[in-house]
Length: 125
Image (cartoon, rainbow, N blue to C red):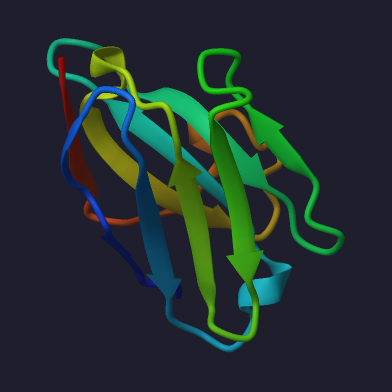
């Protein structure tokens, strides 16, 4: 079992930055693939970024590539999402997800068996 707790959301002006954190319970964090997804009001949940276990390969949605950076600190059981140059369209609830296999691919929400409660990010224009 893995429990995930997100933090770091808030209100920021367009062009600003936020860093989201996701703290995971358990002793095998390094063996989990980790992902960030978001859901805006009236829209489906969408992939944002993911980082694999092991060497930590990273993947990004085209909409955030070059602006967001995902990273992990296995010693702290934490994954981060650094968000720069934020835009109003980035406004959403951001969710952290984890899975040991991510058998359907790291960019697919259905691959993840564990989810956090979400943290709100609001970008004002």
